[in-house]
Length: 480
Image (tube, rainbow, N blue to C red; front, side):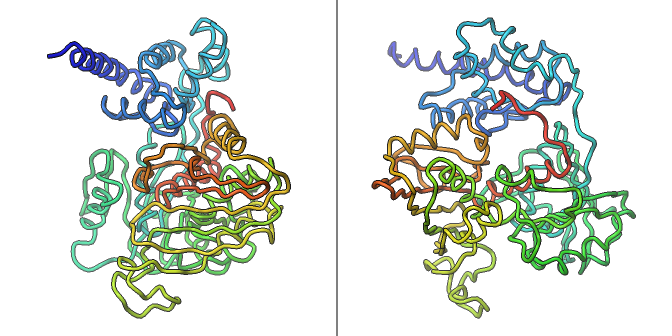
């Protein structure tokens, strides 16, 4: 074997060994201290050595260089010695901040940076909040995956039940199988068992009662030991106060969160933009739409920095369940034509819905949508007329910086690879990812291309809203 080949192989084996050494440390922080570690939104808990190395490799899309595991392993080793309280820690951002600290000793830096949770011995985990999924479709199953993955962390969200209409045949086993296997998002990370006798699915130790009902009024959650639950309606059947209000007549239900745009006076919440406006009296809430979540954080940044005079948003959106696979009757215009064979021009209220979360943009944005024959990941094209001139370089620097260290870093990601395509964004936890290479600027006109996983990225935003409702968000480090 050549010297170069030996060098690359030995380098890989060294990094693999470090990743393997990191696994028990990450697990100990998670189980003993309620500390969740991640790299730019990619959680490291319960990951293999290869997955940990891939997360380090992913960091190059943000920092332009791969995150060296030789730098993060000492970080994790030092964290385990601090007896931390509940927290969410981004190792990439923490490492960047440490390297910029000017040569401080690692433990001294960590003690200062994490002062709020040092020595707290796992304290700070929120009281468990019961959550019920009403409906178990694309979004419902992804919400289940995320909450099961967070079950033993500091978030405090506890998935207790799903409510569905009984289907023909082996209903329970079929629903468990759909949770276990997904054509887009891959297999469930863990173990799923079915308890036919008690009508339940057990996913990684989380006991999920399956309740069969045809309407919300039929359900008594207290009969299953569920109290003060947040009911997440992901059916999209009811979007106004009267319809969604049916859930509040179910015993044990305290709040309702809709995973679709709400109508009337229902607040449409885009986490990171207007979630702090949720009040105790808000029992009916909407998490808006996937497109609204992708657009609004970017629009907020652009408006605060450059002031948006007006603009148009065109979304190139993957097909969804409400379209037909082949031509057939559909109540909506054009949506009866085959989703798998056509680009389908349709309308979207997402651009106008931005104003519900960001009132200063009311009347400033128009929008349309084109449904395309892909199963997941979409793109929003924001054509904005600004009040002051800029350049592509300045605008991209601003958006990249905000994606790294701004208050909307969870919502707005940034990439400037010339090779990425839509499938590269499957599983992205960001609300939207700005494609910097595609940015066009001509004086006061700016055109931005924003990728978004319209299923998983949106589901991540919904869970963030749930955590805020439950007041169970662990402190995030490093501080922005």
